Length: 103
Image (cartoon, rainbow, N blue to C red):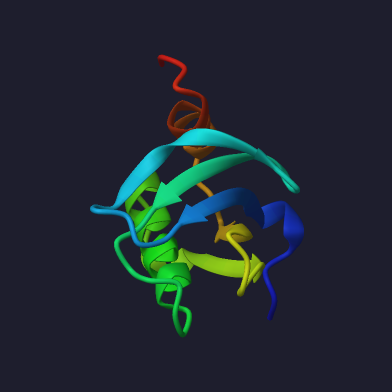
């Protein structure tokens, strides 16, 4: 049974493949609005950067990797990920990572 939209958090992401190391943090104003910047070491080949970004996002948000899925942008640097059943405070964590606000 699909998870209802109210039980998922949509996260706009800008992926930077081929980075020297994986990092999560920063803001990019992209086509989906304010996006979280995720730099990954993996190249943009055969979905490797997308998978690395999915795993990095899950780790940064403190959720299981299985809770994060790609919604749109498989071949784009600008992606939308869904986080299933986000817990309380997850939106605050996302804002801290993206906007650098203290909390």
